[in-house]
Length: 271
Image 1: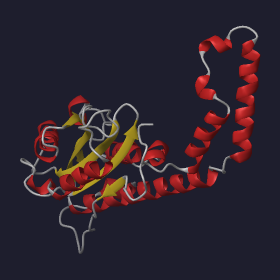
Image 2: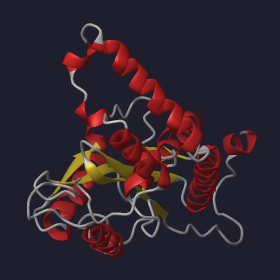
Image 3: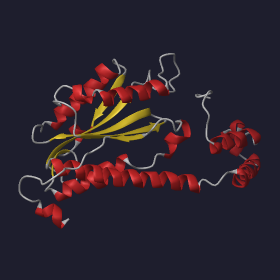
Image 4: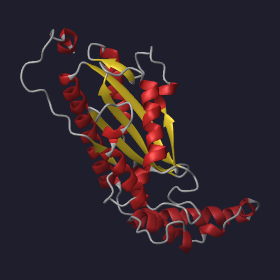
């Protein structure tokens, strides 16, 4: 009802058809009281049986989604290793970028933004990363995962990596990125959550802030917790967002060419 012009996948259309055929939308709590509860159970069983006979097998679709997730994860790990091959001390910024309730996709008012506008904002954010105050140019790399939730509609999880030798105030830098999203990209319609602010930098499992290549536990946490979280499958998003919109984007990390200056990283070699 909220997206009348959208084309949904077969399984969603089938569920809507079954709900209409068996009048599931007309059921109330009163129907579960007394003898009528038997009829309700029979109706629900019949609806489930119809779904089992009519539904397409979703295992292949889930397998493809999981395969893509694993591919993104391995690519994300290689991406991080290539960045580390160039610079051994990184400053990692994490943010969640949202749109305010009155403007988010699906809001019941005339101010709601369309999917095209939301993904255009994300594209502009990527194009203008080098102009964010405090970053002193383009970041070493970025990963952005766009997700959809009923509570927060479409939003973006952002991982930015900058030179840790030149930057170390990760909380202030993440705030600058969030304010850039709100004031410049969305013209006041956006909101953000600064993940760096609520993370214990002293914890080896935080995976954000300053991360040195020699800090093996922190590097592993960055790979297995942060990057893995960004690469996880998102089945709900693909039920409502067409595939022409990419949900996972990352920069290209160029590996170091030629010998690296400085002492060899013995700890990384042992890993």
